[in-house]
Length: 328
Ligand SMILES: Cc1cc2nc3c(=O)[nH]c(=O)nc-3n(C[C@H](O)[C@H](O)[C@H](O)COP(=O)(O)OP(=O)(O)OC[C@H]3O[C@@H](n4cnc5c(N)ncnc54)[C@H](O)[C@@H]3O)c2cc1C
Image (cartoon, rainbow, N blue to C red):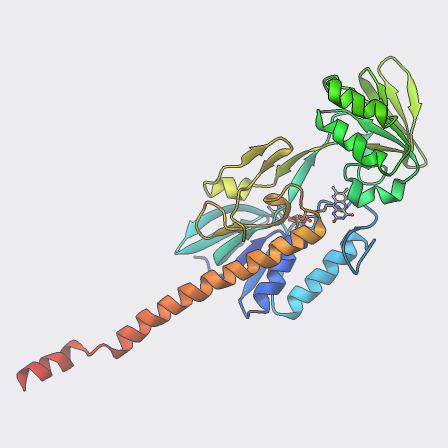
C-alpha cells in the first residue's frame, strides 16, 4: 500500500522551469513535491547569461538559490530520478529510481531536453565550454575570436550569420549539410564567411579548449570556438507513459502545450525546454511561473466545486427529517 501523502502538485524536474513553478505554487500554500535528477541542461557551462540580475551566475549556484527559495515556502525537494508515471485515484503516481513513489493531484513535467550532439569526436569533450550552440548564451564571450561552424543542417547557415554579428572570422564547415543554395551562398559571401567543403573528422583541443577543426583529408583549420546545432529532444519518457506523443519540429521534438502549459493529457502540464525547445533560462522561468499559476487556478476551481458539493450534502435535509415533515 502506498502511504505517501497526496500532494497538490508533483513536479518532475527541478531546473529553471520546475523550481519557478514550485515557488509560485508553494507561495499559494499548495503542497508541492519536486523530484529532480540534478543535471540541468546548461550544467557544462561556466555561467548563465541573459538572466537579468544574475548575469554570468554559475548554473549550479542559480539552481541552489531556486531550491532554497522553493523550500523556504514549503516545497519538498527529492533528489533522484522519476522513472514511471501513471494515473491513480483521481491523481498521479510517480515512481522514483531506488524505490518509493510520490502522489499528486496534478503533474508538471519540467524535465528539460537532451541536446543530441553531432557524432564528431571532440564535440562532446568541449561541449558547453568552447563547443557552443547559442549566440545569446555564449556569443559575447567569444566575440572577436575565430569561429568554426560545424554544418549539420541548412540551419547552420543561419548560425554562421548569427555568429558573424559578433566575429569577423567565421568559417562554415559544410561537413554533412547540403551545399547552401544560391541565396544562402550569396549571403555567406557578402558577409565574408568562409565556406569549407568536406567532412569533418574531429575537433582538436589544447589546454582544455578546442583549437582546430580537422577534416578527413587531414586539412586542419585553427579556431577558438566551434558552434554546433544539436537536435533538441524533450525528455518525455513520463509523458509518453501517460499516453502523450511528442510533436516533431525542424529543431527536434517537444511536448505541445497551451499558452499556460497544459498538455493534451488532462491534469498534466509541461514547462521549460520540455515544451519550448528555444526557451532560455529566463523564458523557462516564465513558463514555470505561468504553469504554476494555471495549476493553482485549476485546483482552486476543483476545490470550490468540491466545497459546493460538501455544503449541499451538509445542508440537505436528512431522509428522517423529510419523513417527519410529511407525517405532520
Ligand atoms: C551549454 C549550454 C549553455 C547554456 N547557457 C545558457 C545561458 O547562458 N543563458 C540562458 O538563458 N540559457 C542557457 N542555456 C539554456 C538553458 O540551459 C535552458 O534554458 C534551461 O536549462 C531550461 O530550463 P528547464 O528547467 O526547462 O530544464 P533544465 O534546466 O534542463 O532542468 C531540467 C531538470 O529536470 C531534471 N529531470 C529530467 N528528467 C527527470 C526525471 N525523469 N526525473 C527527475 N528529474 C528529471 C533534470 O535533472 C534537470 O535538473 C544553455 C544551454 C546549454 C546546453
